[in-house]
Length: 375
Ligand SMILES: NC(=O)NC(NC(N)=O)C(=O)[O-]
Image (cartoon, rainbow, N blue to C red; front, side, top):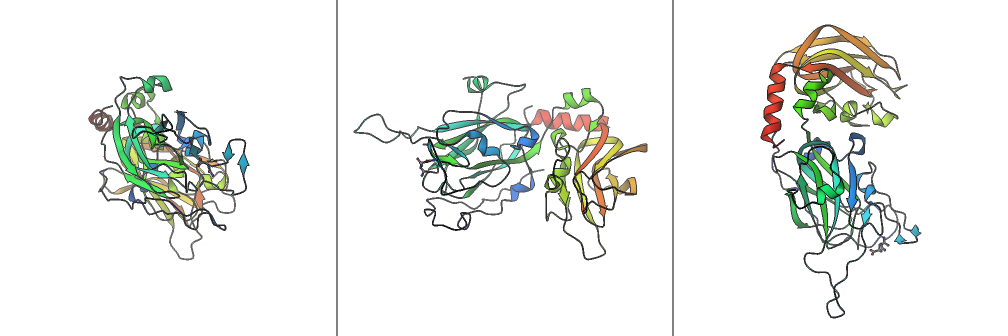
């Protein structure tokens, strides 16, 4: 997929001091088209903020929390105002005559993505940092194989590519940046110039798995997000994201799955996926964990070979039980590049697993893409 380059809305400058009431009432945000891609900096996928040079006021780990940042005007701790984000101390200059930081002074945090991938856009949200947000931010990316330590990542021989050049940002705003680096990224370095606080970081993109790993595994879940599957479209996203259906592990609460609004017509809901590459599917799991009074009543699965192929039934319309994992062995393998799950009439499922193996063509396509991206 190629990202259409739009210039996302830009916010710069201070927000007003908090004046009471809903702290989000004056939060500045916009619709960023790249948020249709999954968040590769998701803890659930395995992402982490592995190091930061300073976290005096607030911990670096807050950056990846899934929920919006909270603000309690009354909450102060030993170090100052308790902030729900990553916040560094105020930098100072070298002398009384020059008390200001230098132009190059900045703070950094190292982020490991949940899976290697191509980044299409980044949101640096300074929610509630109104007078203490960074003047500017920049983001670099690198691809380091294996499991490097923070020291390995900070070594001089690691080559970093600029994903977001140093850019002025706004306080109390979701600052969005479209990215078009066209290379595989495993880690990010997020810089705030010269210092300050960032509430949340989101890194939207596509997972590009190592084809050697998937080939050795043989049979695996060919639609799983961590293996390179993704949601192309869905009929409804009212309560929760359809991407939840391909997240790792079992769902542990209702909004960890996919739930649609109640239908009052004669239609039904669906999700369409692109598989990691052309695959042969042999077994299907549909889980309705934590969906009890709102589980889908029935579900069917179809597979398509190529973007314009015809849909071929893999699983006929089948009754589902609430809060239950269902397993189906297919009578014969079904080959394709795309899949869809249709649920009747509405409700939700928590996970869809499509177990199979890459076809020869699938291995070749994935290997070519991986090498082209520098993997
Ligand atoms: N009111 C503040 O937030 N002040 C300071 N920050 C914290 N967290 O106390 C600062 O330096 O910006």
